[in-house]
Amino acid sequence: MISIGLLGIKGGVKSRLVLSLIIVGVFLCGCQVPPAPGTSDAAASASPKSKDLAYSEQAEKPAVAEVIESQSVPQEEDVQVDAPLAEESPVETPQVVAEVADAPKEAEPAAAAVIEDVPEKAEPVPAVVVEEAPKEAEPAAVVADLPAKTQVVGTTSPASVVKEAVETVKTVKVPSAKAKIYAVDTVYEFGEITPLEKPTGTFHIKNIGSDVLYLTRVKVCCGARHELSSDELKPGESSVLTVTYVATTIGPFEKYLNVYSNDLNTPDVKLTIKGKVVRRLVWTPERFKLFLDKENGGCLPVKISSTDGKPFSLTLFTATENCLKADIDPNKVAKEFVVYPKVDLEKLGSLKIPKGVVRIGHTHPGCDVIKLNYDLRKRYAFAPKRFLVLNADQRKKQIRRLDILDNYADSSRLNTDGKDSMFTIESVRCEKGSSVLKSTKKLADGFQLAFEVTPPAPGGQRLFQDLITIVLSTGDELQLPVNGIYSPAALSAEKPAE
View 1 (cartoon, rainbow, N blue to C red):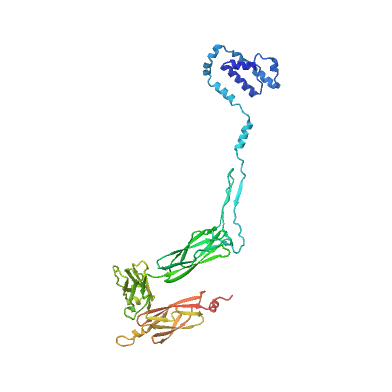
View 2 (spheres, rainbow, N blue to C red):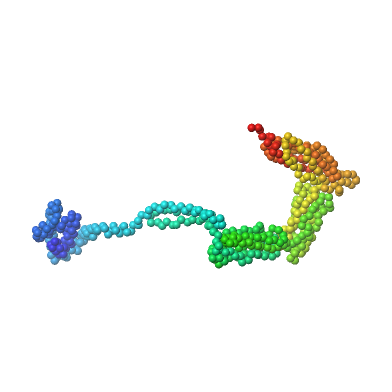
């Protein structure tokens, strides 16, 4: 070993190469370093190796000895050629050095480091299903109208964080004696408003208790809308209830609202809104009747006035089926107008429904379009107005009487020649044959007709319909619908016997 050390110190590059080869060979074969030339036999025999190892050592000694013998101890001049020798074998030296440097290290520390860096495998986390908790059977509990949702959360990824399941359930507002509702003002006065306005009023609701106050519901009156700034009030907090009122009728009004909460002692608070709906324009008449036997239909002038003193102008005049017309000047501005409608009696008499509407437009900002309803007194009328057959039975005949009256008999009876011009009945027919005219009786202002009614077979129906047409001497045709309701006996008689 001393000789090997001296060889490594005094030798040149090649000597160091030989030394490296020896060290590598010893490590790989698990042998002791063979004794260098000149070492004692005692040192050589000190090896504890087995015979096999000794045999391998003897096999390697000749090769190593040849290398050592071929490399003589360099002289001083040999030192000068170290650099050229390094250039001749530039690859061999780094490879040997690399092999020496890459000698395996102990595996235990490295293995421990790997174990520390690898996170433990997380066990699969089962899916968490959050079910809605059963409600407690408390009769006084108030439940807010919130939709219930259930979210399923689960994962099997290692080292992942499982978030808590989120559940949105119907929040139960349990009545509390410590939560106390208080309305700062219970009445709101709107004053005078117009039909076009949509005024708003506010109420302040406060929690004067020591527990959370929940405003669970607001019940509003007809024509009112509401908006609540907050429905959950901590002690000392307030909420603003905004109420918007839409007027539907003219005149004073008083409406009520109820605010419900979880206050055990005062579960609801009653609020009041009041005011008066007024028109900024008024007109007379507000409704009128028209007649076929009067001049201009008996229509009266319409007077329109401003109640707030603001001038305005009229913009349009229309009527149902153009039965009425009027001349208006949109350029005229005034605080009051008088309109004179002109009635077209021919169009008025042809109305199928004896009523209509007149609309008058204007520029006043405090009122909508003026609407006047009118009724027409038609010349002919039925009494009763409906031809109804009750307890109809196809096996039985019924007699129904019908009066046809002339509403203008007094004024239209005499012609210019003085003769009686009262109408007469020319013909009567029934569309489905359920009613047959049996007799006609003259009245002071019309006729009374007697019909024999024979209903058709029910055919599984509870009702039957028909139509009677009456032709008058004046050329007018009057139509009267017939409606019948079968009796239970008639319906059961039609069922086949079992």
